[in-house]
Structure formats: structure tokens, C-alpha cells
Length: 355
Image (cartoon, rainbow, N blue to C red; front, top):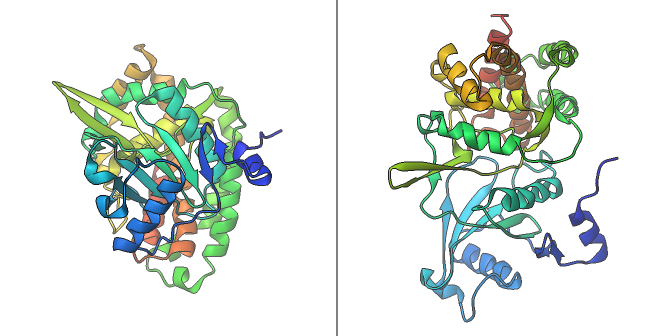
């Protein structure tokens, strides 16, 4: 039986503290706000959460948009002219209906305690407050290829978290939502999205699902979205320090899916408004073997490589379906979800040997 999030109980009981941090479900931030209106609204929320020093009037604070994702809106909030108080990262949730924000924030709070460095400070109705990692920046596609990242991925997979394997149920949900989205006029009129064959994806996933149990794989906790924007880097002396963030798609899955996802993200795509990955950047066989030898700390990883490569196809369909659903929900103005869905569909077909 699936565990009920403490946020659910908090809403029914009127509790204002969850995971030892403030939770104010009735406070919302209008995502259309900007400038002084946004500053004053965020200041009111943060004050109500007791996250600002006193006195700290809005006039002494600043708010700056932070780039790094296409699902959420991120803001750097600096209290009191940045003096005597740490900067805060305010995350306004996006992707309504795509992510269970109770489960996701439970996971984030647990990962903060497990990993250190990242901090959970509280949650409000449509967002969350986190500590801002000063001195860190999102990796470029080139920077995230370093073998030092392997250790960070392995650390996540070693996190002991109970739960059910949900990836196949997620596929079922997204296939249904994608079928609905593809009936919308805006989607059928898109030059590339109209070429995505959702029924083909559905039938191929059924075949792959039937084949996976024969691989003898053990599920573990996975990030499921290890792209460059979710891997931060800081240079400390001569060393590069990496920190994985954003666990909104995290859950129990096959590590092979997570590794395949990470390799697929070498090609990028979501960092550009046109949504076109560069698949010439995918790791070649030797690079994949080096990565897996580092991960497993052994020389012979041919079987492990074959397993991950099975999930390269599966993972492409995962983000293809996600992008189809987002096409119906968000449209194409800020990011071309339709082109991205098409590119991931075609790449999935290539990985499966169909084109």
C-alpha cells in the first residue's frame, strides 16, 4: 500500500510544519507577476514562513529570475541587501498535473538530509523555498560528461528509499494523456508533432516491458532527469565539485534507465527553445564502457552496457510522451515541445533498430 505523504495529513489537520519546515498551503504566488509586485508577494510569503530576518522591508530586498529549467519558474531572493542573511531560491511549480508535488517535496526533503549541501526551507501553496547554492552553476553539456559525475549518480542510487516501481504506470498515464493531446488542433497542425506515432510508442513499450524482467535487474532510487541543468558545478581550488539537484521526477526505477537518461542528455535539446538535440554528442562505446567501469568499479561491464542500451530506447519514449503531453498543456511559445517530442520519437526508433 502506497504511503500517504505527510503533506496530505497536514492539509487535513491544519498543520503548518512538515519535515520540520514551514508549510503554508493557502499562500499562492501568481506566476504572471514581475517587478515590484513579484518582490512584495515573495517577501510576504517568506515573512510568513519566518525565513527573513527582522527588520527586512521589501525595499531592502531584490529578486532575480534564475535560468535552468523549463518546467518551473526559479527566483533568487536576496534579503536585506544581501547583508547578514543567506540568499534564497524560490521555486514556483509548473507542469500542473505532471508531477505529484507532495511526493516530490517529500523526496527533496529526504535527499537534502541524505546528500547535504542542498537545503529544504519550506513550502507554500504553489512553490517551495530552498537554500541558494552560491558559487555553483549549471553544467554545460561538455562539463557534465566528466567521470566525476559518475560518483554523484552512484550516490543517488545508493539512497535507501522504499517504494514501488512506477515507471510502467507512468508510461500508461502519459500514453493516455498523449492520445488526448494529439487530438488538439494545435498539435495536429504542428509540422513535426503530427509525425509522432503514439500508438507505435505504446506497442513498442509493451514489448520492452515484457523483455525487461528477463534482464534480472534490481530497482533502486533514481533521479530520472539527469540533464546538464540538474547537475551543478563549482570549482574549488584545482577540483571540480558536482551537486545533483531537482528530484521532481525521482522515484524507484531501474538504474539502467537513469544511466540511459543521463547519456541521452549528452545530446541536450531542452536548453534550446527549438528543442533539437544534437545526437552526435552521445557517448560512443568506449566512453560508455569507461563510465560503467567507474560506476561498477570493475573491468568487465559488457552485460551492464547492453542493459543500459536497452533503456536508451525506452528513455527516449519517456521524454517523447512527456513532450507530447506538454505540447497539449503548454503549447509551443516558450519551448518547442512538438519538435522535441518528434526528435525523441525518431531517436527511440533508431535505438530500437527501426530506422
